[in-house]
Image (cartoon, rainbow, N blue to C red; front, side):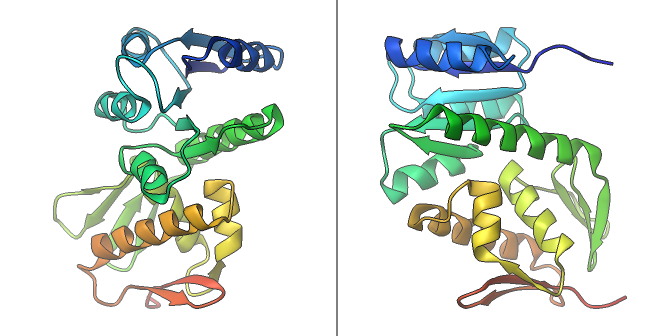
Length: 231
């Protein structure tokens, strides 16, 4: 049994905030490796073994989006969270597009940060423990984040796409409550999170469109419904 503490890479260029976050997380039994700029954070990631990455967006050398993109090229599954003072929709969506799994706006409480960290770690654990499922003519391999249509080449899903599809599948032919899934995967049901989820739903529809019997319906005012024909 592996009793090693959870190891988190933290990249934050504001010294006082960095130390507050580092010390608060360490008091909760987490191991923190702190970096003050994007370039050193990326180098540290390459050399280390981490369970989760927390990146400030605005950093010298490389910004958080650039670091996340490079990390995703090396590791498709590790959870990535952004710390950001930015709240524009395009900035939030960009974070998800480059491979981020969550974001938290400054100023934030340590309690909120810790809850979000544990949510990401729990999602990772769920993904590792789950198997594969049939969705119409697709095989959905949740641990590998892949959709396989008949004998075609697998279609790669992002971390968030895989979790969103898992929850849709788990509630197949029923309405998946919009607020519930926003809180579960985004940690908030605010406007920015809602816009982001709509983008991910659109992406999933495109990836599932090889099987015309599958639909993801928008049930206005309630949420989404994954329609799968009975077999």
